[in-house]
Image 1 (cartoon, rainbow, N blue to C red):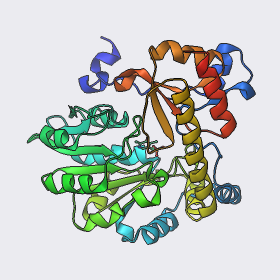
Image 2 (cartoon, helix red, strand yellow):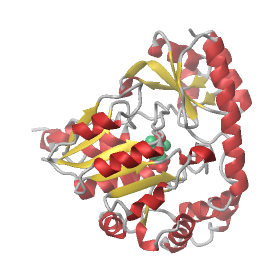
Image 3 (tube, rainbow, N blue to C red):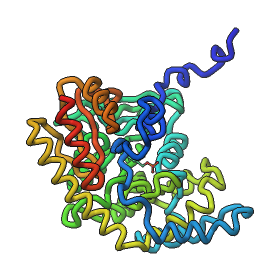
Image 4 (cartoon, rainbow, N blue to C red):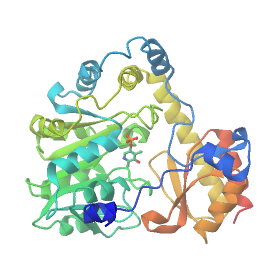
Length: 362
Ligand SMILES: *Cc1c(COP(=O)(O)O)cnc(C)c1O
């Protein structure tokens, strides 16, 4: 009898997450020098990390013998968001918080609802608890909230929403999200994943955190991985009612964030200049890439994030040709979009190299 025969069936049924190809891996595979490779595959910040965060990390190298203290980051986030400290739950990346939500509400015999083409971590977090995934059909590649409401079953305990969504970049207007929350039964938790919130133009943004007082079943998640440039340190968080935050904290590992991550995130929160520069670079880069895609006659899905998804005739073939030229983008066949590729907005020079390589790869 093999050991894998003893594993839970629902664990064996999980398809592993496929991350963006690391630069070092492509260098080994293609025999290319690392400096020749452009990685636009994981929605990372092309400007690097916040300089304030970098300084904080360096200073915190003294003190790594101590267990971490989450107090200061929680205090600062609560103040920034206008909520109580007992409403903020930190995660080792927001993926960690998504997992906490799944563990609080899901188990075999329960289900979670999410949209077709939604973020890959929702099925992973759902299936790892033994719960069933109920996938609502997408509309124009984005979440169809009417279909999602209709998909909620008596055994549904969690709904996952990404706004903006990854990998499609679609954005749901806030009034629609609010109407959806009003329509969802109060005993179903809703995770509103706002990883790309900081890339929305201020005029499009609404203070969704203020909704928490009306919806005790709402969990809003955000991350330091994207505009703050701390993907490698792993910091995200949830904001929810005190009641829900307490539940999430019960399944959280006590020291789930390390000392360096905590001080980096605390410093990044105050680096308004870096956030503004990252936002502006993304705006310009989005225009550059969208104009380039149009020039090549390629359709794209209008995106509200730091990436854009576009259609080609054969996703796998184009991806391979790009890789051979040292350009890493993200194939998204695993999201049911085999003939689309997702490219992260990079520096102007990186975007230009991507467009050049794409032109010869079609
Ligand atoms: C990138 C991303 C996250 C953030 O993940 P981290 O674990 O915080 O790095 C969360 N949700 C979506 C939809 C994302 O694309």
